[in-house]
Image (cartoon, rainbow, N blue to C red; front, side, top):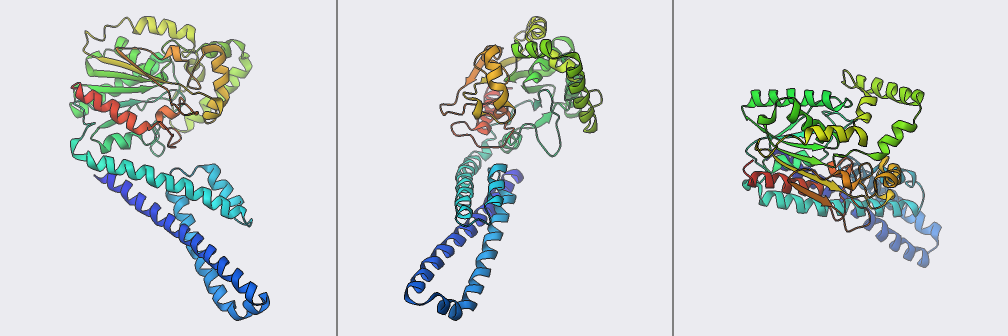
Length: 399
């Protein structure tokens, strides 16, 4: 209940911030109407002289109300993106523009209040049902070029939503960039440690992107098949990415070496012991993925009592994706057709069940949207509720 109460508390604080800013606008408009009327009846200088103290006090009160409200929104709003914060600061001292910026900020914040309020009511209503309390815990496996950081969750707000609804969550905690074999060995060790420490006997794996290739390899080649109850791959390139082949073939050796050196050096600073940028990218190419899939898909998951499924999504327009997916979308489309900004549609399907997500609204759903990377609510697609339904289904299967 602590996580839900924390969310409720944040919601109440955000409400207070909105009330302060709305009060500021009401006072501003009321004051303008009043003094415009006074200026019509009396000379401006006379009005200022007679009301100077009143104007000063009113201005101070309004200034305090405004700054308290804006600070609360800047600190507590999850949907107030950097662009809104930036333009709010830039326009702050520009008459008229500052009011427009404030109205936009309020629109975003009020929409957040409404959306999050509905989620809180839904979670309170079903709290006792524990619809995500699966028999076996959930192991969430990140994709390539990321780590399981303590203060920046790769999966955004998804784990918290699952935990509120009863799920027990663990993370892969493997390196950000390694070839599939090395990542698989790390995951196998992680699964063994979880099983040993918790006596849970098995785990349900939800793996994003390259993580799906890693866990398949671990099951087939690392001896942990009897410790896995289910595997759900999210936007995994099971058949690789044609554009990755193109990049690896066209990029000069010097360029690849310099990029790899920069990446590997940076991620050693944040915890990776042996990051290998080139090995990771190579295992995402269509040519290498074909070999990996031929090996891992030869495993009899059904006989091993492992439920398997896959999920994919489609980004409809380049501008619908955040950087760098907005740049890669058209490039990937040229090689792999409809895609999520990184992986083509034909590469997603795997396992007993396949779910392909398409948003009826113009944006679509990107590779990053599928893990709530930007923590932004998307019209037409509630990513947190999608995972709640996904894990709830695992529970209904007795997993």
